[in-house]
Image (cartoon, rainbow, N blue to C red; front, side, top):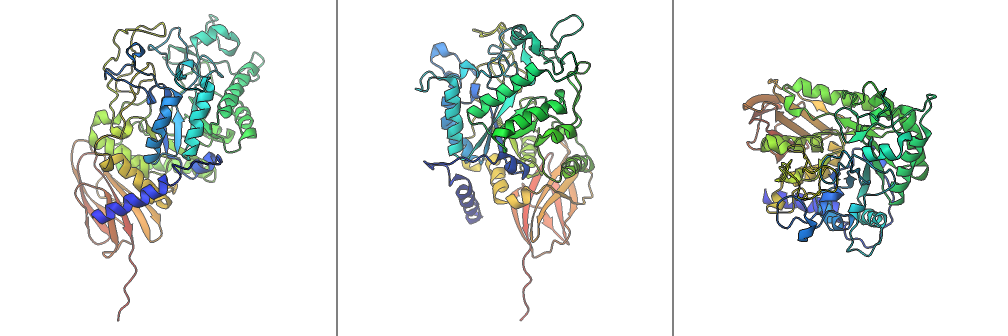
Length: 521
């Protein structure tokens, strides 16, 4: 077994680290192709916190004590850490300037955008010789490209209250002539998509184009459009075509899912995921935020099938990610390690592009010591350290989410799943799943097949009780070679089936290779 582990580690490191230290590089964006082929391994970071230095470990950054906010420059050294995790796409939460009025948190929400084409000046590192924050952002992107990693940036869907005062022509008004608050997002206001004649609001379209200009100037390879569905198909057609005149491989990922509700109901129409894909988006979100609520294998299979059917409508020229753990979700680690493990391994084995939030690999619960307390200092009109409990902080200058590069790095559960993703890429990247028959409704099993080799994933959806099941594996023979990637107690192979006993939320992952028939003498 030690030899097998050594071989896996060697192959994995050879595969993903070979270009890491190349001094010369010729960057060629192929992100759309990579994403559509389920080849993007996406890691989300907040530049404001990623490289932050919290020396006294109280979770908040106090520059008067010599601590450092996250910047593009102090984020650069950590890019190699991401490369070593197998990441090939770095997704930046919004980097635009944020509003300060009617704000949430002491730095303001990343999504309370105060300018389409101005990068947040707080992300400037004054210790670096590059004089502008835009220049430093370009330097960050260049360094990511040298490591053969793509960069995408989040495009907020709404504007700050400050912006609504400065540029009222961009904003929707209610019957009282006041700017409109979507849902319960008190620190932002809805944009006016159509003018009084029913045409697209030209001023808003031009602002969106200025955002595209800005991010393409710094070398970004694509965007994730926040709440994309509150803009209509024709709006996105214009923006996407504009971006792809300069870069045909520029990725557009829609934060949208088929069953989500309209947060601007009564004010703006809500585009379907299919309409967004028709407009040119390359992918969307498969909604897995309710994984703990899925009780039966058939419900889980239906969820997978629905996404596969939607992708097949576009001849498999689209793809998706899963929202197991985004900044909008409570950390999976708060529900216990077994649940975190299931999320981790499903994220790497489902027919998706894996998506990871900073801190997830180390099971950060985002339990900030300062949360919702009175602030010592504020950069906005909010005098509290506003935080959503056990969710990634997007409102303050806070500590970096926990890093995986600590003790027991080589034994990391996250890295093990990433190794599987890379080593078995031809199986995993397939956009199909073969669902296996089990005799227990709480136990799911699916197979990713490639002829004489396949991956089997089995799991228990019961978070209270252990469950036993017989999992039928068609065409599996007793002489087939079985290699475990993830398990506690080994299943028993018998008569073309596995007999498994799974603890609550336990997941098992196996690789099976069919052995050639032995010739008789």
